[in-house]
Image (cartoon, rainbow, N blue to C red; front, side, top):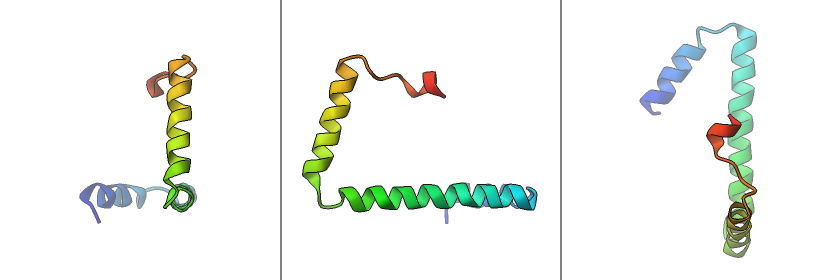
Length: 71
């Protein structure tokens, strides 16, 4: 486990039980989403190339925004 994750877990341990459960649910959801994407794209380079091409086309058409504008 990395130091950053250890620090995050230590800080999370100071939260209320409800906040800890909410945070744990978010972490689990994120991990499951990453696993699902990994499974979907693993061994399917054609699909990955298609998604990349679509993203680049959207960017070229000006249909994307920097993340710092969204967040």
